[in-house]
Image (cartoon, rainbow, N blue to C red; front, side):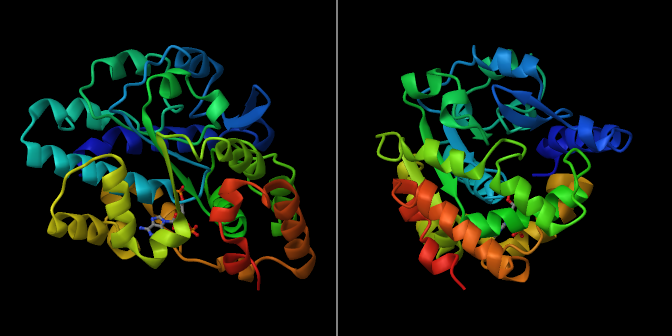
Length: 313
Ligand code: A3P
């Protein structure tokens, strides 16, 4: 696992070093009305992304930041690798070159998509983008997409801790200040509420499956099995159990330095449900409850989040 993370670790280390010298107000740029961190994304890469040609066999994971994308990303990568080994199909295995590519579609350099064309299937691709900012070929070519969602209170809590220790993202003096930014959508990769609303329109698409952070926390093995079934990845019961074991919070945290370098400590923070109770005050709870009801209460994805269970004190 360690070798193929080199690109990820290098890019993050470089980004962090550059940002240490940058002004807070210069860290983000806006593209089509959405903010992104300058050190990892650029208008050039978004332009180049339009020409990205998705394949039906691609394995795509979509999730708003801090929803557990690296967790589910590890599950997917592990499933694809193990299934390829079972098939003894050289062309279907993740070769070194592939493993070297930064897994987030919109992060990297503008030549990335040319390099990705040379990669064999099945390519595992992560993204934080809303569907209308993804290349059309993903939908046209019927690539399968796993949409990962997490309840908004824990996402906001996780994002707050993350943004304050990640120099490519703006830090906040107080939780209250961050809460306002989150509620008004002034976040890197845009508004959580817009994100869920937009993906909600695709929930019933034939090639889309949704999974929640909370259901995976409740039963990781079942979640792993559902994901494998959706992408038609053939593993034995023991192999599925092993994938689930390798993706426990504890296992991933212990391995974090190897997989994510210095950045690892920041990524695997608490890995639980309901940490929002340590930050939200009563007014903020009410504001979030109202916003959720108005924006997402009647959406398909909103229902899957089980707001009453996970976001009410
Ligand atoms: P917390 O900050 O609440 O701990 P992302 O990968 O999208 O940035 O999401 C990060 C969140 O997923 C963090 O949440 C992190 O701890 C959590 N996470 C990472 N690996 C996990 C795992 N194996 N099990 C549960 N949660 C995990």
